[in-house]
Length: 272
Image 1 (cartoon, one colour):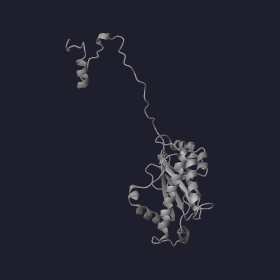
Image 2: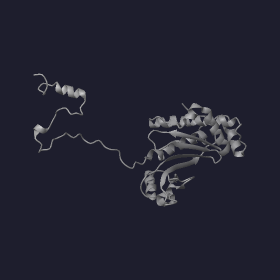
Image 3: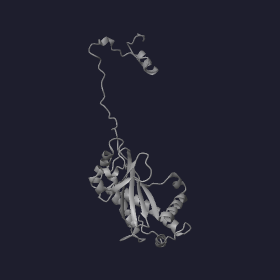
Image 4: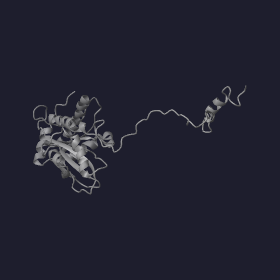
């Protein structure tokens, strides 16, 4: 299987976005929106094949039940911002891999949002993230979100945060609740595949972001799960006479256990 063409509406759509003349009633927008979602599905299949896992598009229940809602939302983004967006769910990862194709800026942005540690100083929490990105490109952008904070958080490139974690701490009194890690790559313009193609620029961006960033991130756990302890055999205390160690049925035993015990040979009350 392959995805090799963004369709005949791709070039007119890009030209309309650059000129600022795209309207919601234009036929090019819905056609490209549907093609982009097909590209996201293909990216899921391609990544899932390499991971040996079921990778799926991140859609809401409403979007699954009424696909036209998804198309309408995408067209609205194209008209207002010149953007196409999609999400990819990968089992076992810290969050959904989000993909944004910014047709005005000519770039593809991949990012993932996830919760940070729930304890430690702000710089300690930032260092927790930086350690996990030791092999990531220095051009990766980090953003920190504070508890009860509104809007965008403090943002800086990884190469800067590595030397000064405090650049992501706007207010030491505010608790960092989560992070965003993002990469930005050039967007191809051609409708097909190959050099300078939109399709390959998106597929490469998704694969590289997962390999360099997402697969190396682990969620924070404040306490480890309880571990199974070895079975303990009951041994009566040494100062208790053996005659006092009762094996008679307890009042808490079920009726079946009591009945079986009472009928056992040699038990008091059983027929001789």
